[in-house]
Image (tube, rainbow, N blue to C red):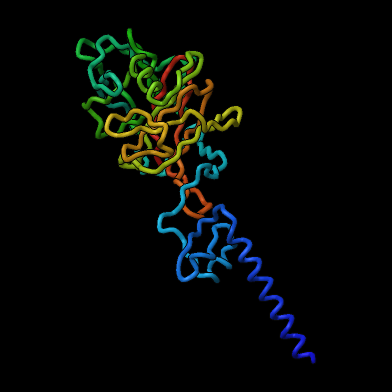
Amino acid sequence: MKKITDNKMQLFTVLMLVSFITFMSNCSGGTGYVPGGNNTSKCSQNLPADLQKLLGCTTPSTPLQPTNPTLPPPIIVQNGGTYVSTCTAIPQTGPIEIGLNAQSYGLGGAVPGAAIELFTSTNNTAENQTPDISVTAGASGTATTALPTGVPFAVKASATGYMDTYQYGEMVSAADANTLLPVELMSSTIVGLASSSANVTQDPSMGAIVGTVGDCDGNAIENAIVVLYNINTGAVVTSNIFYGNPPLGLPAPSLTWTSGQGDFLAFNVPPGAYQVVATGVLTGSDTTTTVLGQSYAEAITGSVSIVNVQP
């Protein structure tokens, strides 16, 4: 009798399991599984993974991309206020002679008469600081100065018809001696065109931060997500950050990470100092994030800031 009773209980358990599977097969939703094998009529995306496998269901060939990836905590690696790069350090030596080439961002034309200010303090800050060096671009848009190697500096460039444009995380090496380093200026027209492409209107009381995610050799990194962390308040900025679409690099609202050009554009950023962090795109069920690079930048009222985000 006991053996027969045990068999009935086992049969009852199996029937309950089959009924549960049949009921769940009518549901819709998604844990990522799709019908497959010999049980296509019973596979359901709402079933637990172990039951999906029991029924012979298979996973999709293309991993699902998350719409709201988990963001890492603020990562502010500093040494005396300076971001410490994992790329090969540039030796710090005495000043070398370099050239500065004021040019229109995105267009490349020279900007004669541009006022160029350099801030060589090691914390990269520029807003409301007294510049260490001030020069004016000549008729060809160039100027010369001397800078120490291996010391990060910020640049501010101003000219009629252009928004004040800042560059952060710049650094020269011995190889830059007697070469021309680009100093970018972004015109209001370009900003208007870019923001229009992103379907937003740039607020003159806010700042804008644009840049490129790249590796130590300057090669653009694809499939990176950019997040801004306000260093002083801890606020996290994820909205109004767009990614450039080749070949023009104009922001495309449909892109949710960097293209092969590595470009990003952040509009209407509240004024303040930010750590700009680039992380890897999450795929499938992977819940980990990889920090691809980070850098320092400031959002300044009515201005544009340019930064290269690297390891």
